Amino acid sequence: MTLQTALLQGQQLLETAKIDSPRLTAEVLLAHATGRDRAWLYAHSDEELRELWWIHYGRYLHQRLEGVPTQHITGRQEFYGREFRVTRDVLIPRPETEHVIEAALGAPARSILEIGAGSGAIAVTLALEMKTRVFATDISVAALRIAAANAAHLGANVTFVAADLAAPFRDASFDLVVSNPPYVPMTDSLPREVREHEPAIALYGGADGLNVYRRLIPDAGRVLVPGGRLILEIGYRSSDAITELLAGWDDVHLDTDLAGIPRVITAVHHSR
Image (cartoon, rainbow, N blue to C red; front, side, top):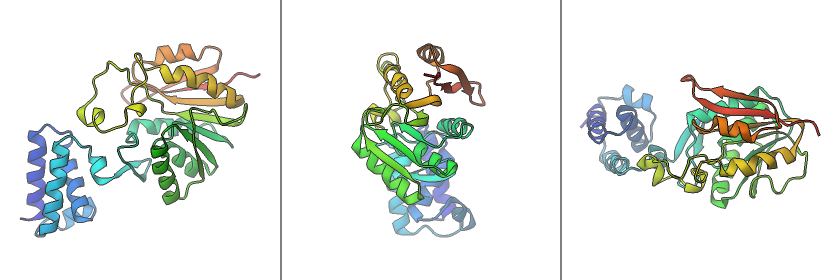
């Protein structure tokens, strides 16, 4: 069997199971099985599939058909042009979270805090893109281990702290606070690969999805300097409610994605 035939067979299996992006998924899994990249697969499409490659590829396809996310099979996810290690202990970084990065890059800051570090994707990216030191908190020690490993691998100057929200930090400590908090309402139905394989603590935000925002916004206000900025990723139905929670803040602004869906809300802490 050639690599090209293996790709086609994998694609067909994934299509039959109604897995999203079946062709891309087959390519990623076969590349992982061979230890090469996707470009190499196409350059060597007529090469015979080695037995060891077939064993790994078959196992990876079976895992994906059983609902395991592709990122958990490969252990990797790209975010803002960099590769991050991911496991079941952290939320898989999503493309929409890159809107948080774009908003932050428009708000230069010397001191940055991320609340809810997860894989470290936001904190590490901001540290590297803004050339500054970043602090990041998370209540999950397991997640912080992954985040610290990603920061070390990518050479980012990030200090990770096991804590609830901004609890360890003094008042008026930061120019910028960013967060992608859990915002899925408990009643929402999520895809199987999300529901069964990603940490619930990073997904669900109570009955209406706003529990963490209710605590995070005042805590962020406490640690921000006057005129400091808060940038939050939000759920697609929560922009009005979170805008209300930001009453008393200045310059509240929503950023939408290409489909016009609100993704990020930015607010400036009022002068004390």
